[in-house]
Image (cartoon, rainbow, N blue to C red; front, side):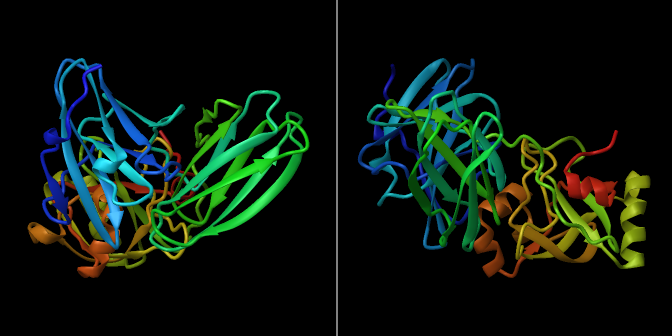
Length: 347
């Protein structure tokens, strides 16, 4: 294994000049920072950029790395964490790098699941699990955990609240008989990990179907995205003004009329309707568009970006006025209420 020294960390970034990631992996605070290590594996034929991201007091602290082709590297949590907390890892290219978090003998193959509704499956004979829950919503979230046996009979239910953004709740759950699966539902974006057995093997989160969302039947919905599928997300707007609806429809029908959507956003009070149709789990964002100000030929650089970048730096974006105007994004499709609700697009 090729071990890269800390001197190869090539930057620390606070807020400005945010790099755009194609894939994000989440790490709950399941281990003391001095014990955790991150193993990065690159099996591709090109060197790849990646970075750590830590949310601290409303800010975002990043440390950038590059891994050579066909190599591995390992860094310690103490190299980028000032205390014990959850964090995320960013990859510049999707589907290329493999990230593993290691704490003594415990290993987690990291994933990008953020759905508020997931299922963890367990092999036969398990009567105890350890659970780590990472809050990815800006405010507190309520979480419900339900356990089931192999016959589908519910064993127990737990409810808890995680009060702070990027806080982790760790708990142990014991059962009086074998448990087959645990279903987790929350009121905001969440990442969960479950471990079982003496060796603390991993049961990863699975978002089996997109989370159903409540829609307003009186609105017309549109998907905003790049012309080809974007690795940085799409978002949804709901319109009830007839003139704005007509303008949005014209842009779908006539590419020559395509313009930048200039809009205002706010923190979603619940799960909202603004989901990312291009993510694996079709997870709803923590923000929604409250008003479309205009469709413009030009827009200010300060409100450019993409939906995923707004999500990860949402507190900053809201404090700066909550405006978006993604330069490469356009109205690409009108959505039915059923598509918005189900997260499934019709052919």
